[in-house]
Image (cartoon, rainbow, N blue to C red; front, side, top):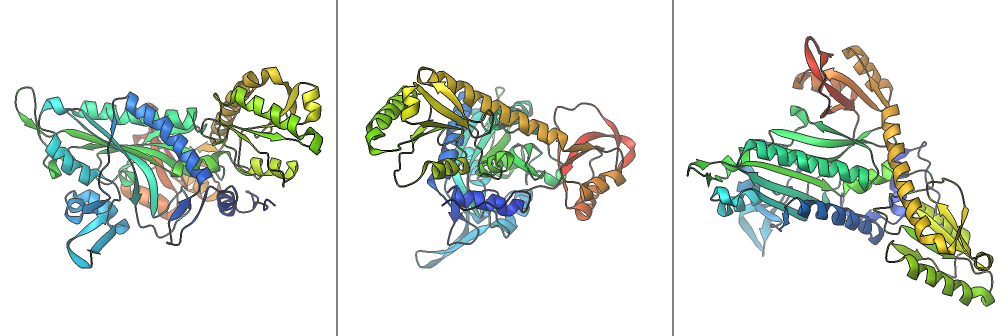
Length: 476
């Protein structure tokens, strides 16, 4: 039987872990801090990959693959980069029964190895822009891990580009941020805020970092994707130069950007409930599960044949699964597919066939069960999947807005962050020491400055000048 989930309100972290294991998304690996992604969880990642890969290719990017092992000397070349990643590096010191002359770093991110290659490939302005993406695994040795959100090894994509001008690089970084935000809302049905990171939260080696920030159901923030302007930091460190149209040697401006399997964690925590997963239709492994109701042997062939006809009718348009297991009751199946978050369930039995109808049930609970003529199934599935997506997205937006508070002074900022979960906005003057102080007092961080917000007002940490609108929150 399906185990009972820990209620979300009792222990959110336990609820999250219960869902992952009971819905068979992932399991713990024998190596502490790493995970095994099970087929149901990996299918969600494949849908993420498929959606984003098309977007990347439509904007001119090409996929490539770079080595897992990176010479340690490469990591050392960019000072901020090595400082930012040193605590998380996994090193190979022995191979083939011998100690290596130079330790190899297991890829934490690929800026260094890719820029080594860019130095070979980029010689002229005709080689630019260079637009590369990689789907890969990376290793960052985490001390405190959580399935999908923070593991020592995880899957991601990382884009790396080089451009002739800073303006082109800025345009690229913002274009990719928009693709991530569009994915979050149009595919994952999660409302996000686009922002710019503070210097404290910026990617190691970047001149500017953009992010999308989402609110989970425990009202903590999740950084769901990042896009970085790298300036000429890496091109100078790796001596990447191109001759411009006047034959002058110049260093290109670069970007990098990525999302990871933490997006699966986002989907769980943004939409799930005490019944289990509540998957957005565009990413669900199965959009529709059909459950034949067979009360006796005589009705079996009729029900199964009709079920197969329905599947043949809709299978080309939707991801469909027939649950025809005969050793499990319909009630058990209903609970199991609710736990696994399948958006639509269709039940069909002898009486339904007599009436030329089937029974629909939505995972989001809207409408309860309702009858649909067999001739209308394709249209009704399409309409309901669209409506489920729209309602999930709207619920996500309303939840974030309802749990975002604005403050006018520093004392109120600290008080809200200490006493209430959620996002707290204020106008803020960029100051690393003040940020550190807020983090020490409240455990909250400055998630981002809101990207599209042009208005300024007196900063809560410096009333003498105007600050930018910032979001503070506790975060994953």
